[in-house]
Image (cartoon, rainbow, N blue to C red; front, side, top):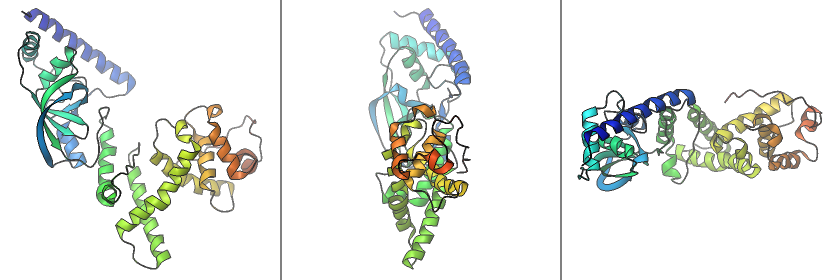
Length: 327
């Protein structure tokens, strides 16, 4: 028979680990907090239930709770709001091989939020289990959520949901996902689409439907830039960024490069991508991949960007003057 003393010891150990996890979250800046289901549902506009089923789910994909998200850490370690007596009784039952009822969860994207059974999840994780049986209610959402989603990510996820709601990109091109890593950027994409629609109307001398403009912008504006980005290999130099981030930066960079160095005409995509990598790589300049150098040379001939634009050799110690990030 599993003793109450062992359950109390396990609970105290979990409480101490919760304190360590909280301190580490302050050091790393990565939140250890569970997500609030109501907040997620409100921000993402996730309301429609798609049905339910009973299945075994991974414990590490449970990222939030309906009402007790302040009582446990992200790893479901108990905090002050957790009931010690309930936790101990569940731990004793589990270790005495008693059958526990399935928990109840909402599924949003690829993650789960506990509707009933927070203490059972906490005990299961404390005992080293990896899966748990659950009644799962699936909630429809246009924006996927991953297990490592952070509270701050919800702002961007909500903006993406608004972007999809306005553009209907997920309906026009269901396979397409445009992910940005900073808040406020989707509004800039919308402005790009509006400008493209305006000039497309001038070119074709007719009113362009919004859906036609969105599809045309994606295929004729967005994809060529993204293609140049992938061909150059510079995504390796920006490990924390997405192709959509670099699309926005490069779109701005082409115009800024032309203004700053008074170049005749807007630089080619290859030139803009290559110089952007040279100036703003997130790794040391000396480690910029050879593909970027080749892209520069192909875009401007044998001379490098430094020689062509600035009249200086690449071995010079002076760095490029920074181009301000206005987008």
